Length: 182
Image (cartoon, rainbow, N blue to C red; front, side, top):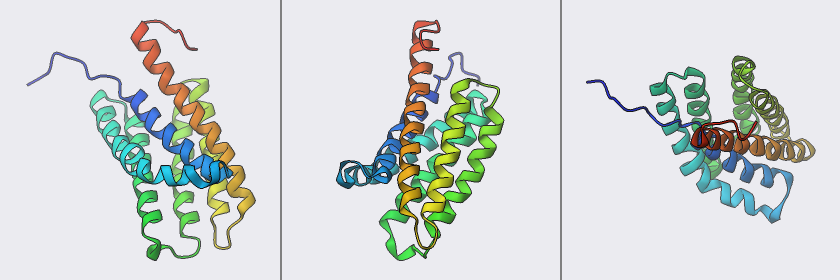
């Protein structure tokens, strides 16, 4: 039976979940707040970045947005994988985190190419996230490269801010029925 009501736009929730979780991880990697961001990120990666990311993915599929569904589903799985990796140190082979992040860097580059025509924010988000993931992949490779991790953390913070802006823009503009945020 077909429904007569529209499904709400899940993208603001998805960008909030991604942005906040990435902000916490970025602050950890950048060396801010004496590792408090990393501690706060662990549970957030499971509940907000991971679980909410997967929920948003399903909602995006229902709305017919294959790119949104694939992105939020993929990065929901990324946050769940990162949660598992961090909470199960016995599974950590040297360089494993770098390899994990590299896979998502490649996937994100493809997502970025797919959304280039959408908006300047989508382009900025795609570029910043790709750079962040490449730096973090290199920084977490076998021997570890702390300078790349720290730089990746700062790029991650910028990525988080763009994600939060994109979520706010979608939410506010939709609510007011006009482009209050460009």
